Image (cartoon, rainbow over all chains, first blue to last red; front, top):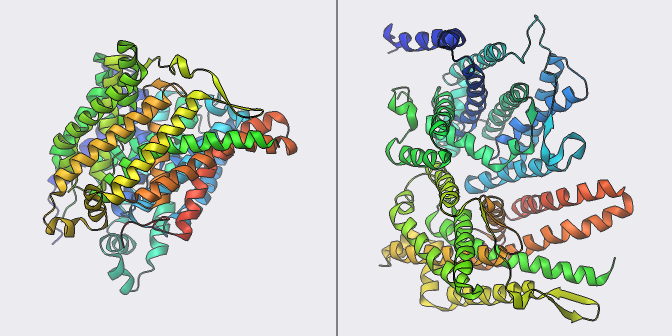
Length: 315
Length: 305
């Protein structure tokens, strides 16, 4: 039943090669400035993939996922502005803080269902948004500029767009690999079972609350790493990364790309950001046209773009 | 703390709460009857405010401008409902989020194309000054007008929903839509009417708050979330819940913003107090919602039995 013709591997291998060669290709085309754009796509792809884990595979419609991205960005940004430049310390602190926040928010939010879960996750993100606005010592509502970047050793400098691109690519690859391993695993199947019929899963003896909570925390951790990467890329973090529209944008990426598909987050992030990039080159009113494209996607591409390119969920 | 300040802030809180109710009333019915997440509800508030500012400047009359904005925005809302939103009722919440998020982008930029990023709108000259309410307490006349209009509309909505046939149908739809349809009620048409009323109320709120806040692109985004908080606290689908939730949220937000600073100044250095006050007030609204949901998971007045 698991016949795997070699053709199935052609697409992914080509994609990996393309991703690895992209900075050279762009340089050859004289468009090196797009490398940082590609880095931005990767950061969003990591964040959107983590949201897809909660929202798509876990069936938990979190409307506050930007909270964890923002926390990661602020933890790393604040440490850098205080002169702590050790990248390992940034990663550790980011994981600790976003993990603790996700554990707490998840423990409270997961007691609710449906619309109330949507609203309560949104509420927690909004609390952090207003908190970030009020910390005048770290930029307040104007945001925090950092001059240095996380020092990651090996003679690598994250300020260099190409270096950043490869670091982000490695993180994204690790996330996708982990997600691909997780879904068919015992744990992953249990999570899917809970999503599809929680009562039945509970009757079968699964610790439904704890499993959903674990998924929520894991996604929060990955989102935190995406945040730590984003502050390194932008050299800047502001409360806007925590605003509900930021959570909304991540949701839009996941839904656009394909809910509960391995590549959904990546496809959605790339499609939305490239669409904005292309449209903004032609018109100042790119938001207007982006809106129409998204609307068309809802009405005509059910199941997201992943469904269109044949990367949808296999049944 | 001076008592008069507290009275003034309570009036401000009540006034903001009543404006929130104008938004929440439509939102809670859309949500309650059709189980539809409409993120673009705040955009109708923005559209209403812009149309009002435009018409006021055009006609020279504040009243004409506001009335015109209500009618035009209601018509626009009904058009939106019949052409697009109606197709989304049967879809899952995620599709609704994506589609109405797209609508926010379209309407934000659309308004920018037509009117620019902001429009001036000021209170009518006759109401520009303050009114002496109590000895030592003078209150802006325009805010009193908002208060009065808010109270009248809230009472009218309450009577409409509780005492009229239309209201009974809406309540039936919110409690159990399928059963209501089985009883022969054309819920679709009923709902287009409800959506139109909701859009008109959005426009009224936008037009009245315009002179106090600012008529600018993006003005609907923050107030939308507050309106969602209100309807979750009040119980989705319940007009009574929306009214009480609005006033509670309006008071928590307004009192927190001003009175909390006074209290904090007793304990903290002034620059800390002025920074922490608004943050705590904004957060308080969400903490309040989390507490309500922890105690009553369906909100204060659940519409579904």
